Length: 154
Image (tube, rainbow, N blue to C red; front, top):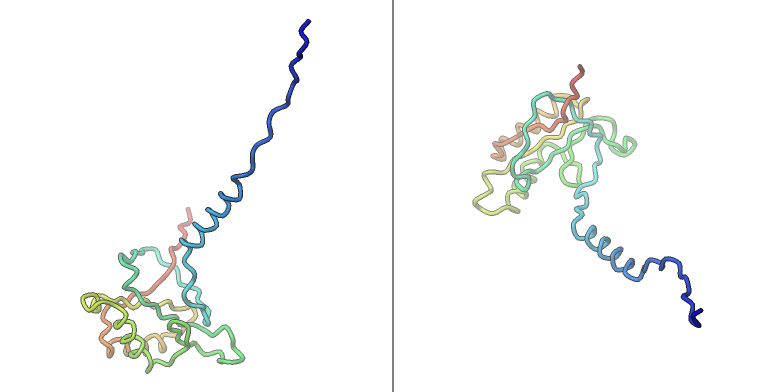
């Protein structure tokens, strides 16, 4: 009989020394790649449904105008309002917004800017036509309406 006997060991524990490195690497990755929402909506925005949609090609050339009933009805009332970036504006302030958005772009791309109207489904047409008239005066020729895809029933 041998003097030395083999000690039976169980399976070795999994090393967790690299786990904090992996967690911090993932955390850093998500912090770098996540884009935060640029504007906080102050108006209700339930988009209408459409059956035929077309995606915009270059979203960096798109500026959004939101139209809908204000969320804070005690402060702003119940009439539909216009929101650009983070501010509620009147239709007469739309040209200044368009010029500011055009100034952010390169000179070559200024004519390619698209104004996207995100209009609440319950908004009246009067305020929309006021916005379109002001966009026309500001020489913003490309205008589209945002909507969501309708679910087809079988």
